[in-house]
Length: 130
Image 1 (cartoon, one colour):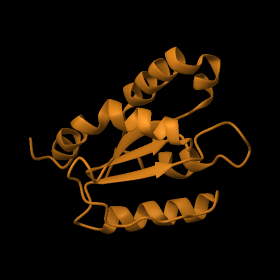
Image 2: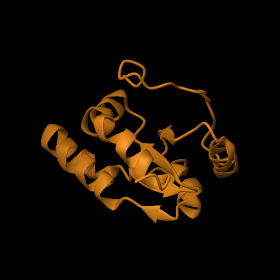
Image 3: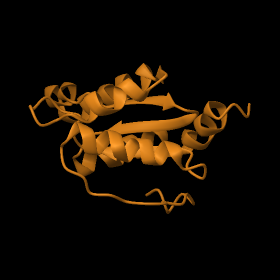
């Protein structure tokens, strides 16, 4: 979906549910001057191994609370109560957009359908180019 919208995917990594590995992947993305957005899928639930939010949140300078709220509202209409189990969030770190999406393919697709068109604008504003 990302490539179909004309965006470039710089790197794809498969990392384990480990705060250190997730944090390191985020730091690598933040250090890359050619990256405007960093996307994580999975690890946003409530199981003990779901630690993406814990790894990412300390890096965020601004959290976009509405992102998770809208995603959960739309998902709730589709699937009911299980939608509230995701802690999906987004925020800004070092002038870059960071997205933490659910791990389910439907959750990722729902989030991208909802927000993909607005991501370039958010990246532009976050980088201070508005």
